[in-house]
Image (cartoon, rainbow, N blue to C red; front, side, top):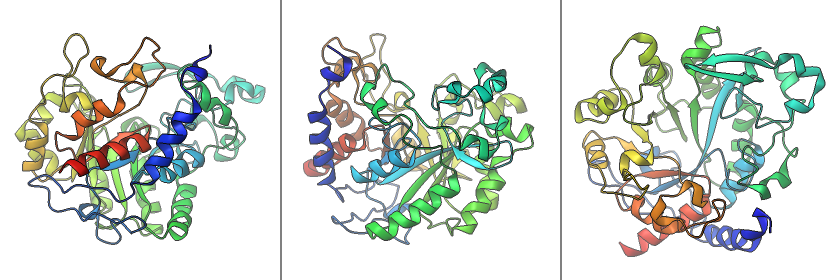
Length: 390
């Protein structure tokens, strides 16, 4: 039996169809974060009123709908909207000639068919990015025209065999193409299309003369998404990138936070000794709130796991962040056993779906304002369950 046969297409169809029926389900923002207006089905959540008017918890399509389509493709972004995502995420890296394109990493070895192009064989190289040595093909070594000759493919085919059906169907989109797409989708759907845009490895690219923030701000201004109430969040693991963007545009910034012992790479380069553990203290959150509107912590910062991988007791992060007026958009929910806490895994197949709803219930009950999900339909249903209980 193949992995695809273990998780039947029928289950995906049911989840997707059900997710589409709960558009507009929401709860109110937790104390200290303002009031959210729930949008009725077919309504216009957030239109012209900024992020505080979005339903809560919002569902952010992680790299689109990466559980169902190759990530960071227009097909993945569109499917995310089709199955209920309120917001769709893009990660930005530059080409050698300065265009911003949507890839989770500048290493495109696993997300494109570049290895099948003999004309680019000599471009394979080894680089150190944020202290990590990587061998592969990198966007900054390609012009946009060259990159457009490649086709996107599934990043983790062993886990998501069904997604390989779509290998080669889409190219790597530029962020400008995504902005055009969002405008067209907004007209077609009768609502604003919200984006959650990440600057990837900003210090690294600035060192190459390919600074991301100025290029991003220029595009946001061109498309009218630079205002405080524009339908866009700007996110980065490097606080200085959000600070730089705050000087260029008024769109809300979100500081991403990984493990407690980790240090943002811009801190490493600047000799700043603070770790994420320092940033999630009341003092650290107050500092973040001086230039950003939210944080994007790993889910483990909201509910830690014990030594066996089971969920433990929630931390005070939600309460502390809300006290500073910050929203929380943790990452990342996925349906497969391999990505779920141990107490919500079902069976022995790591690629099969576990009790994703059970895990989501635990996370959403903490009062987070949104969640990144590879499976937006599942997360949307879980959010509707939460609203029904309130």
